[in-house]
Length: 96
Image 1 (cartoon, rainbow, N blue to C red):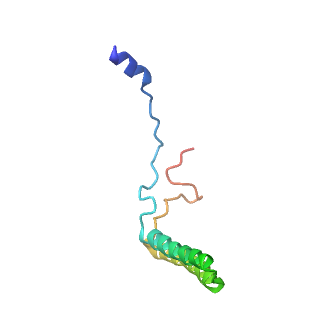
Image 2 (cartoon, rainbow, N blue to C red):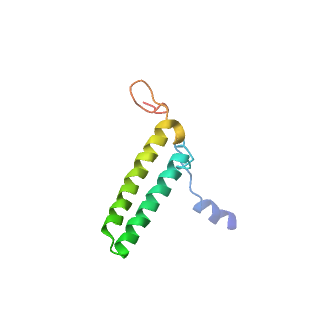
Image 3 (cartoon, rainbow, N blue to C red):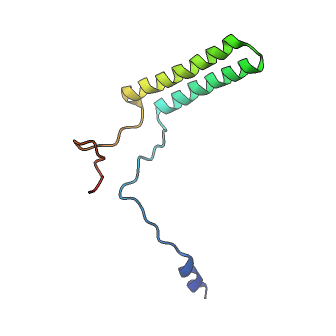
């Protein structure tokens, strides 16, 4: 009896043709970006809390610098590698 109920509730799983990269941003570029942006956010939040306008803008500048640093690190090869593409720009594993 238990086998019948198990068969009725089992669903088939349909997987994609190719799975995406599995590092989910676990790269040096991602970590550095997150750390710098978070420190800028904390700086800006403390500036708002203590009513220090110039420190708020310093925090905003730190956030912008974090984005630039992350982009530069990605360009230097410390980010997630790009998916391979064909000559016409489509993903290499795409099928017609």
